[in-house]
Image (cartoon, rainbow, N blue to C red; front, side, top):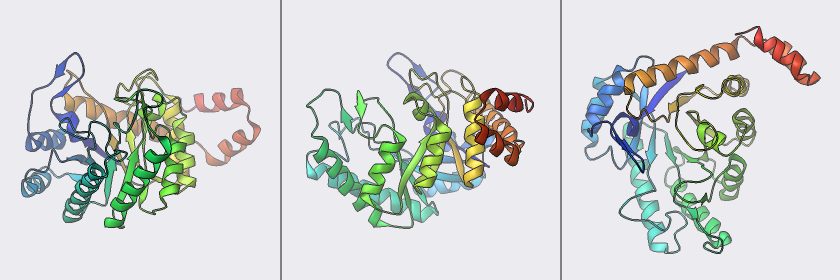
Length: 316
């Protein structure tokens, strides 16, 4: 298992009410990541982390860090306020695609084979605000153009049901998988963010299975919440058995790739928070590894929840 930290959460973050942590640069963030025991790498942000690619490359080496992905920001404070991939102005969509291509070129330069993107601002707040058919076509055309730039780099769409829009265009695993099938590019898939799935009232293990069966499970983000908001908590803070079932399912489907922590430490020590995230994730995977496959297969055929819970209780 390889764990990474999104660099955004190793520095200053803010919500509508408070600002957390001191502002710092990418070198300081990578230094913090290198201190977190059990964390093997980072998910870098584009464009924020790439003012000087050579400096980033050196800091990664100095701290012994790999890179799980580049997180392409299609939400920008200074532009694209009416959407990026779905913007009604084709000039904006071309600009977004060109920016993604630049991020892909940097990924190739650094030997990174994955870019993840959460199209948060593509959606609507009001009914009759968006032409849904035109928006899906615009997004499909844009993502296809980006994917074709380098078929060796995976583009991963991280869906989310809402925020900052009242409803995001791609809000569920099934919706995003269907969209990827519509675009029809082998290197376009899905980032399964456990917190976003829980926020959308999804079963994270079932969504992982569905995405695997459609060959669209490209990447996994780990975090937790209470289902009422995307709180970005340590896995297991709220949900226990759903994460055990997730790791059991990921073992069954043969997922053997990076896990990135999408967790906001707020005012707490980031290193301690991410070390605990590793501990909890490994705990869930350890329980999943001790589930006897033949016995569980029999229990699943019986569909007797009391019998199944009795067996699972023996493992903890």
